[in-house]
Amino acid sequence: MAIHEAGHAVTRLYLGLGVIEQITLDVPEGGGITWRIERHDDSTEERLTAELVATLAGRAAEEVVLGNVAAHCGGQPYSDLALATDLAFRMETTLGFGQKWPLLYRSAADRSLLLAQDPDLADMVHARLESAHDAARAIVANQKEAIEFLAAHLLNHGTFDGPRLTRILEKVRERMQQ
Image (cartoon, rainbow, N blue to C red; front, side):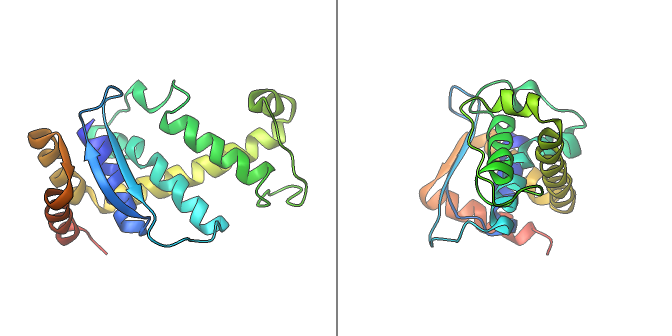
């Protein structure tokens, strides 16, 4: 869990996605990271793709650092896989970034039904997810030292927020590769 959450945090730092407010291993779901966005970024395809990368970075960290992935990355409606799939689906259907029919708004009460009925759409959503996952793996591999450093401190402290978070993130940044 510590590697997973550190992967999210370091990738968010690397991509400049918001300000991290807390990293914790002490929640019922096992761990979490909260952040805020300081400035309102336009929801461009580039920025949303970066969000996909950050969302899949926990899983990527488990793969790169540990060599396997735990089931907690998926399964629940609030899991990383569910959140990433939802965002990739919306990028293809309702946000105007679709590879096919970008101007056609295709809202769906049941995303699973639309994906089952349209295999091309499912392929495009999956392609976005695979591309983001590949990017997350590359970032994690490049930032492995920083991720392992943060994970070790998470194991010792459980939660970082406030001034302690600021101090540990400064040390993480010092270990990050550009």
